[in-house]
Image 1 (tube, each protein chain N blue to C red):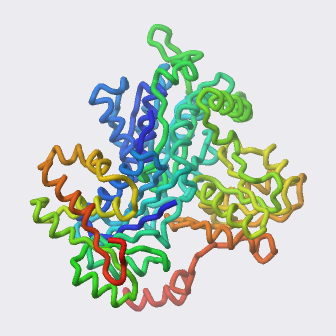
Image 2 (cartoon, rainbow over the protein chains, first blue to last red; image 1 turned 90 degrees about the vertical axis):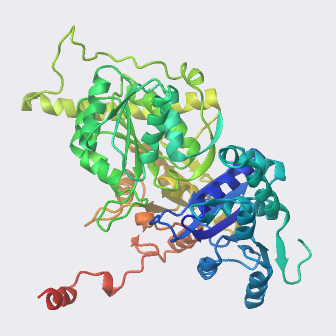
Length: 190
Length: 403
């Protein structure tokens, strides 16, 4: 069983991101469970969403308090995301550049995986109403860090949304996200 | 067809597979996705049914009953305040013996305003005469809608069937499930054959005045329908598992009960979480099992009486409350055991208004129940303080402010 909890802001596509990731896992034969916490849905308000993957049917129905991966889509909700609960084994993946990730790594005295999804989205012209579509690169990063599936499956899942937008931008952004997860502090993994 | 979908969308796909012909419905959170999806399927020509937008839930249920009485297979979905608003017609549907299926997405009743899960809405419809099932998984949601029509339409039953699915935990969560095609279902569930129907060529009156001389008999016949439903449910669930290879239990579902000292009794998704709790308890040397009540009506009396001889202790989890008494499932279970078993039974109240229920909490409470530490009724993780109480002092404070 792999448990992932995601925190971000309303309008960042957090729920869509988790649904996409569930679809990726589903396509490689996993049993999946993806659910947002529904509150007052409005732009800019904190949003959280959960994802479970397993090789056997999932019986758990509760929220995830000690995730294997904590994905922080907006650095502004980092505190909130940590307060919700992590374990010593939790791997933290944050949408941030290397400087921000290093600072956080120092402050928490633990490894921080990072990807600058905001820059990747903007470099590829992925914007909706002035908001960078960080969920496209982050989907790649999450799938690659959690080793859910090869990159081709990510593009299978993004095929429909990408065809409605600029296909090449989606592909580039997802691919960059997939292959550029960094690790702040003494980590050899990236 | 295997799909990754929300519980709500699975309900819509199951209704299509069941050959539903008429859908009168009114939207309410967290049920809205069900009827959105049905409307979408009908509009796209992918579902051959009549969609009736109505002005209220009371009308939705009235149209549901009327459609069924013309011989059509009718379906609707609602939740919480919507179900409460149609309450009069909920009685009517059972009294007039309309074998409809309706999905209720379990949500708390306000105030305080709350869109999240508990069972208060459907528990409050306990005495209307409907069959009531509580689902624990996405796959069970699909299969129960299809099975529901076979059970309700059986000529020895002819009662409406409510399928309860937990808000968000089932309704808005994406999980993978198998949805049979219409062609795969049609042998198991052929088109509805009413014993009689409203037909302008053969006018009859149905559901009009019944004098005291006959009324009691109409009510006793509803009880006979409920009693017959016990047999029909067992047969239908067995046949379905032989045909489709899927079994969710019949009136109840058991998990590791055979050598258990304590049975955790629950309805809906808490029972699924309880399975994880049982695995953890057994790793710690505590012999526990889950006894999931699938059907709250008809109530599994025989199964519970037999449980009373198989285990030493019972913990009943209620996601509802009957004010001035105790959890509703607790009352029912004790009633069934009366005169048959003297084992201690404890009541745990959790998950109200969508409060998360973790297996850790269930593990903790089951251990306390077994060691005799738990009082008769425990409000789980409730954090009641003086601020939550309506007291004379707090009313005095209001008086000072609003004077």
